[in-house]
Length: 351
Image (cartoon, rainbow, N blue to C red; front, side, top):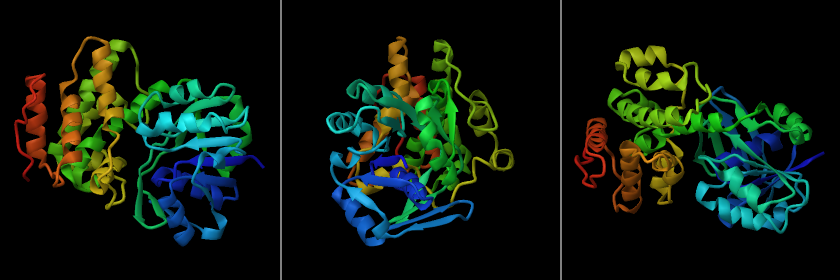
């Protein structure tokens, strides 16, 4: 049986690894000592929005706290935060066996390229996790939205496909992952809006003023992608370019037209919101920041996404957790769009 290593025991890593373990895969984790202690005490309890439930007891979990835990792996799933990709690449380089397959299941773009540059002789593939995972308690991880795992097409995946299928997590292969990654990133632009709103995702998306904030960020990104000739993949019933218009519809109409988008656990928040709550650095520079970099490469500006980057960075160091009202955040982003380059907060975040 092929051995799998999940490198990064956060919410996504624990959920994917736990589902694979529950289905009988030969799998181990590499994570921080804090995560090792949590899993050693509580094991893994996994649930999803469809009512599924899986349990892996502590004695069924192999957990290492250093890169040597990946030395015997045939497949490594990298699930660390974006800012840790370079570190993980350097850690894996001296221990990973020749011929191993490495998959980046991370937010943002370019992680597979970073890993590939550091890992010659290994197959490195881009992957994408479309669903949100939350942790309702120690050792517990809940898939709070729907979607199918996506991965770059490669013959090297053949030995591992049955393990994912048996776990109920089939891998959908794509010849070109960049349109898929951009489609996911467009949806992830809501992470910043949700974090600044400080509300559950379903509640935030049910309110038009917050949706209009997301629509501004998406429309800005889509205009830049049009200039590059890149067409995002279709991950939702609607093409990506139609979603900003849907977001701007009245609440009652959005609720009827976008029921699937609202099929989210009522307590779920974005990972960026969780990062702010825990006092951790966020992935904003690899999400909205990617739009800002795309604009810069083409001599353009992305003022809406740049403002969201700035607001999240300000929230990361703020002594109090911000909770922007939809109207205040929308006014802030509209002001940024009208006056690009201005570094003055135009509206306060009082609700």
